[in-house]
Length: 320
Ligand SMILES: [Zn+2]
Image (cartoon, rainbow, N blue to C red):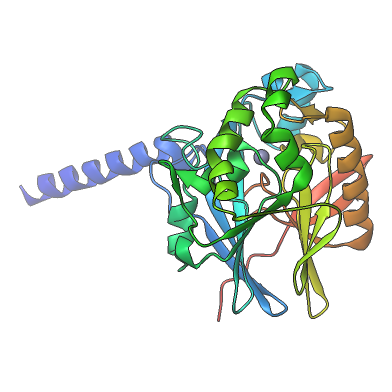
């Protein structure tokens, strides 16, 4: 009797193990639940925390331009991937000691109830409240970067001042551009929904050209993907990191082939030229970079490989 019971327990345990194996872990597919994505590290006097807003599947043959499905398949296979490919949405919190500075805000509710919008949960897990955020540095105005500014009609960061490249304010918030542009109209209406409440409250500081934001942080315009797209460059005690926004979207494809573009680019030729220029700079200077859509936490280095580049993620560290 006892041995029958033991057999039954063992059989049940095997069933559970098997079902877990096939529902995800063995295949690398997503599990049902995931803890909020948070990764903190020190850089000079600053503490930087990568915050995940979630991931979104991307149907690459429909989205990538200046390429073809066979080339996409070949590049994905090289990285052990298959279409559709997950894009991370990463934001970054810089804690200067007396100021909390958020680089990008995720998608908020703009991608629907199941995609993106996890930034607030990640922020809370990292130990910060949205009311503590003093400054928001937008790399550009687009669903997955400015979307988290407003949720349910409410400004999510009530005291924060939003910094953004002036050409993006001029482009996305001008109804005349919405009428004549080839770009998907939804980006214009989303800009009104998420950025205008901060403009109306006098909480937006548009900048033009290279602009100091705080001691140790400057904004550097890198137009192409959008007209006001900008990097934020942080330097402290000789260490340096650049927050790169959407200089690229798909690591496995655009590192080896930086000339491949995406339908989200407002000016794809300028976006590809900007990417080539910044990849070359990052590779020769061996500087640390943080990307909005690189696999979370999206921080690492570029290395030249063949005629393109490859990605070296920052070494993982968890100790006192
Ligand atoms: Zn983006």
